[in-house]
Length: 330
Image (cartoon, rainbow, N blue to C red):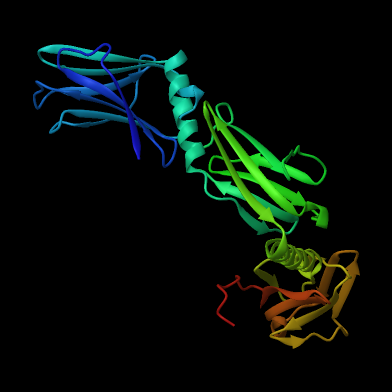
């Protein structure tokens, strides 16, 4: 759906008027101007505050010049000029997009945004329950939203969060309780347009949202606490024989993970030249006087009741006097 507003003010001798088009899909704005009596050499240019706009488009076959501004905002306020020129001279037309003209466009976009609001949806989240509506456009300066619970106006607080994005209006109930059940209403005001949307957070709707909330909360606890190799191990380590190799990584997990090292998928026995040291969350494996038999794919394996993870590194040992060679697949 497009809404058009014709503006003939400042029409040049070659022009047939300019059009302001507001796109309800994205809140973008198009300005177009049609010219006649042109030649192949005729040049069409758009200017904003006397600076040329390179993104303007011109179709010589139809004589239409088009300028599209994505996500129209107050920074687009100003004087727009469309100019045609060739060896016969030049002509132009002006659009004054300031003051009431710009306010009128934003008010209309706000009305379109309010009418585009989808029915309220209920969604369980990790933190609680979200109630939201999708919109094709939202402008905080020209649109106002108010939430109600059982016809009582809601304000943001410890357990209630409200907010908007360019395409969504939302209410977030943190740590939901039985007292949060009931009818919720969203009121959207844009100029003279006022729209209300309602949904009932009770019965099966409340139970389903709570079940999803508990599921996501449990998954978040698992992800937060499961055993992980956070950082530290390189992908590849190359070392000369007879040197001492030390590899350190950082792990996390609650409860503290069990730790083991693998070489080519087999457990490493920490005897003689092999030693492991754990200091808090840092785990270090030390191999003294490395030789070619120590080459291979190593992994540190950590696990606790919430899960496990393996961090891997490939070690290549080269002889005295040799240059490190590219590693072959192991």
